[in-house]
Length: 212
Image (cartoon, rainbow, N blue to C red; front, side, top):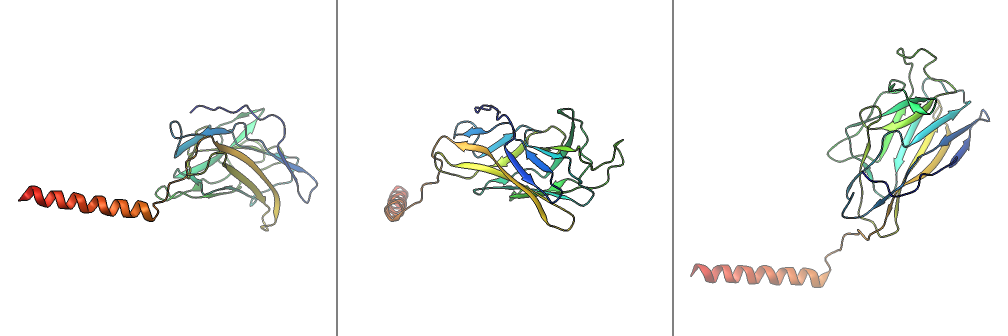
């Protein structure tokens, strides 16, 4: 999948929680959408949507929620978050169970609840944890089904973090896709319906004549 936008540098969204610490949602790329490349099925590279929990006392039971805007859907059966250390993914996707998604209808929301991770050598949920959103495997692309939108419209991802008591501690929003072509479905108005009806009548008339 080609990416046409310049990588976004710096910290894009900062939110303060009750501990006075900050989170950073740091997506790396936004992709242009047109009918010849990635519509309606599109993806963003794995580990491009990053959640950095900076010096936050997160523990088991905290929830990470991702929501898509403007009718876009997550299109894969399940999704994972991968732990990052030193600026790269570790392959560890055990800090939260997979977020399930109905592949026939898609889903607009993914929820990850942090759990104890017995496979990791350090405390499984801690102030240093950084997570990358992936498909069903560590590092795999995040797949979407995009709606028909007007030229210039965008599809964003909204990230929210809740503590175990379901209190919202952070929210951030980042653009994933921007439409560079008008892809709004054209509705069939009265004249269009009339034209379709007449066309069906003529087809039926000539079909009957050919049988005689």
